[in-house]
Image (tube, rainbow, N blue to C red):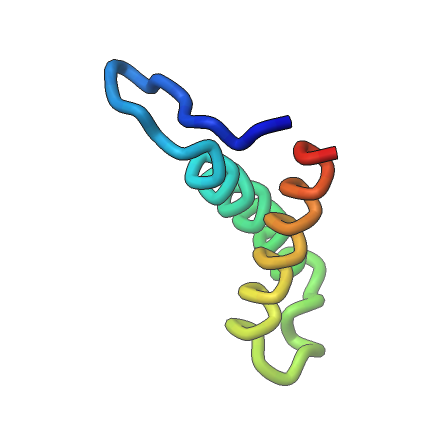
Length: 67
């Protein structure tokens, strides 16, 4: 699959930027679940942990779409 631009209301947007926004929403949900069940209390640096989760979600989604 090619990562071509997507026409979004007349503006051409790179597909990876849409994936980044989608991965951010997924990360927000995962962060909410983690804080709800107390997972973020057990990590050393919560902000770094959330950023790592975002990178994992984005890279996984990119690999799935590219395959």
